[in-house]
Image (tube, rainbow, N blue to C red; front, side):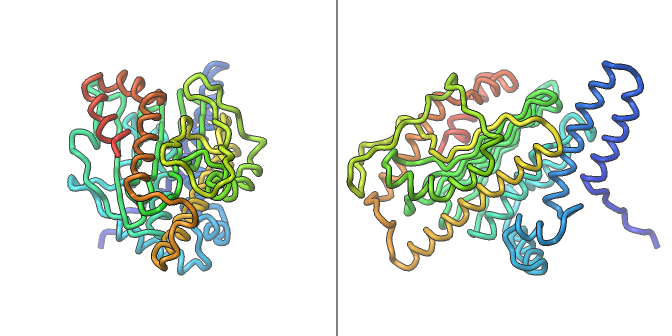
Length: 368
């Protein structure tokens, strides 16, 4: 009987590429520099893929990343989470779509393991159901085949909208963006993550809990308390954002009260716990980036779980007297702010043209 085909792990594939790159380094200084960059990129992708899949790391570490107390429970919960994640109406699966770069197998989808981990981890906290997106907007490839963009959306009783977007432009750019709007029955901040690889080695990382107000009590409860210790542990890697694209963070409002004025919508949506970094592309730096990403995501999941319990047990929102319409107004205010400052539309216009980019940004990127 024919033997079933064996799948080669992404970590092994990347390691083989790394070895090929080292052999090419004998060709000369220029080739050596290219080979080193390719080796760093492949090794970093291999390390992250290994962390997600449990390759080359102990079961305890893998359980810690996935938030489970035993390997069997981790496997079972992950399988159940995967079973709940159905494809879009056009049959797309996130893991399948992000398996291979548009530029070929020699280009690593660096952020794909981050997206897969995040989706499965959230599916263990809340019952996500996929919300189909317009077929002409959820997936797009440039006419010359040099880039593609893929988007997904989910919702649940606790999540108004979870959007994930991946731009794959081969070695020119690998960009992953995810944004979670909590259900308007909850007063929680949004969760946002931007992970960018531009060119051969320029890496930009942004992680934050997006506040709905600058009120000092809100910032303390939902941003500083859950994030202060995590951000402090990566302070050595953090950078200050320049303020060239986005305005600087506003100070907290201290009015001495426990509620906020309905009109006090922030002019800046960065929190005191925002993490921004420009790490290099190496195995070590990617390990720390993945660790920071998982810790921020897990901290948000804990907020989400506690808020769900408070709501379901009738304990209320714990302090801020907003109805659902007011929460949605603040979500939309963030979308308007993002649309004003986000450089993504200009980049997308260069790949996909003005007309399609305008429709995409209005309906998906900034469309609640």
